Length: 52
Image (cartoon, rainbow, N blue to C red; front, side):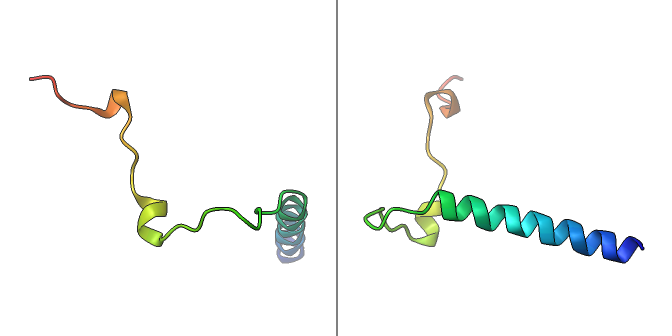
């Protein structure tokens, strides 16, 4: 019963994700980000390519 096993695995993973989300809710006053802000890359000191 490979199909049933895959369905049970998916069900188990989804349940784990939902439980984790319920234990760690996003704060009501958390900052709102746009899609661009979420995907922009932050510049880190090691990311700078100023060397010749």
